[in-house]
Image (cartoon, rainbow, N blue to C red; front, side, top):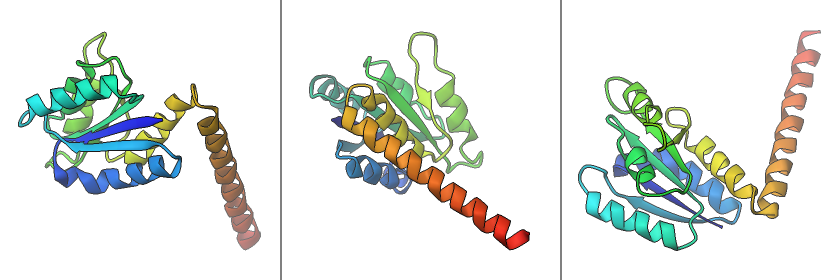
Length: 162
């Protein structure tokens, strides 16, 4: 089980570290790179070639502003690509979000919320869980734990306000 996370700038890393940790907690190997679509295009293309050959199953690509990175990655692979729009400009990430979701037909990028690294990791896990039963079981357990926690919070609210 292997994923790749690529970001356009090291300033994006704090928003992606939770995703890296989640994937590692599930036993997924994570290859992390900082390769701008605009400033390091040759290195990015080489990394995508490697990902196409080394067993990578999903690529998470995060970028802000023009946010070309996820689309450039998707244009060079048929692996699922999850785009994470990053805030940081005066538009608070809306520029990145719109850039990532407006891909042309045939080159899709699944897109999560602005700064949504955690959900990108969970979506990557769900995609891999189609093939890996152990991931499926761990995700089901995680969802059950979330439900128990939510119901406990509900009971606390009821007890406090009745």
